Length: 494
Image (cartoon, rainbow, N blue to C red):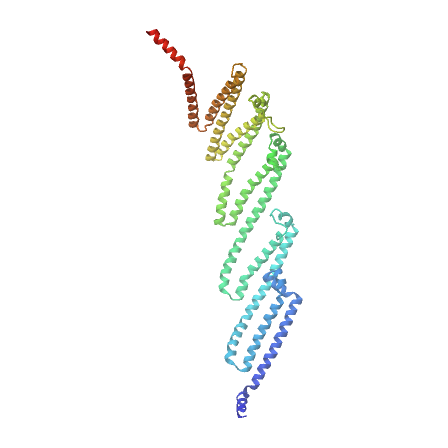
């Protein structure tokens, strides 16, 4: 009993404080629990929690986060923190309560700044939301999604153009308010870099706006002039001219007038792009692009001249090829394969030899036109390659003509020897034919320039072998006759 009395005597002065502290802890805990749940339910019923979470994470994620529960827990622990401070103060534990009080004083001194920042956040959100709705309404009224969405290549599952523009404006307004919010929170370390960034963005917006205006107006003018030129040329009968020349199949659905209209569109759009890039005033990006476009614009006269040369050459080539084809057809050129002994008959719908010769004439004219066009464009290497190919093609064509003449002469010799009625006429006729074909083939290959040294050596060896064979045949076959003649000559001398 004395021990218990000593214990009660020691803790007696702290009894009321301990009871009061426990009462404060229990009552404070109940108050924190009730207030946090009431606030959570109020936020959930009004939908304010979803709006706040939507500003931070987006509306889709806000639906699955249940933000009212998170906000309720935050309020619960904040109130419980105050209850703990009161608990330690009632107990008289100044060593524990004093640091917490200092922390609380810092928090309370920061609350006005935090409240000002929250007000600015609310104002920024309201202004950004209004601007987003205004921009979305403007784009919807102008039917920008229907007019520009297809041209921009937007699919069905992608964000519409009006919504994308509205979101850009929304976050741009929030970005403009962000320095004010950081200034209200007295966060100088983040404020200075952000102010510099926002200043650069605001300084770039006029250039971007000017470039966009130039590009839109230039594109609009280019499209109008393209349609005017295309419709005017169609009204003048350019499509009928292209059909006569044979360009309609090559050009497809757009036709010659559409191609010329597209050229006009590009010619107008290139200076517009140069002006838009200059308006951006980003030298590191715009100067190389502008120089490239200027070089392309400087090449346009040469490009136009080369295209004109090719177009005129193609038109004249079609006319000359048609005349050559008809002339050769009238001269019986289609029967040439039969005369050369070819029994092959072309199937119905295939090109006749005269038509093929016409295409060959067109190809020859276009090769010369390509050489001239390459020289106009100052493509010296390409012009040299096409020139060498043209020379080689001429040699090949001449070689084929030589071989065809050889085949023709070989058939004549074969028929002449066969109809002579001599013994072994078939063998002699085949020998004559083969000899002429070999000789013509050697001449043709030499004309084509294919391994001249090998051809010369083979042809010389062949003639030498034939001469040796003839000499051996006559020598061995006339040995007895020769000995008899020599004997007679010796006897007469005696």
